[in-house]
Image (tube, rainbow, N blue to C red; front, side, top):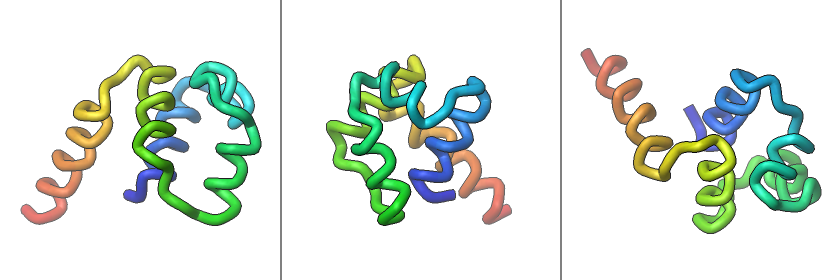
Amino acid sequence: MTILEKIDKLRIERGWSINNLAMEAMLTQSTLSNLYARNAEPKISTLRAICTAFGITLSEFFADEELDDNREKE
């Protein structure tokens, strides 16, 4: 799962639009829209703001990914 896919998963779980996420993360909607349009990974500062909006740490964001990767290897 890519970082954008993970962000989408967390966003959808909360019932948030991209605009809602931008407001909660105190980012501009164009910042998030540009990430999706370019399929780019966010800067660490942007990802930190997104994680704060979700109420998780960067470690927690990536920890779930590591668990998923380990399950796939088994």
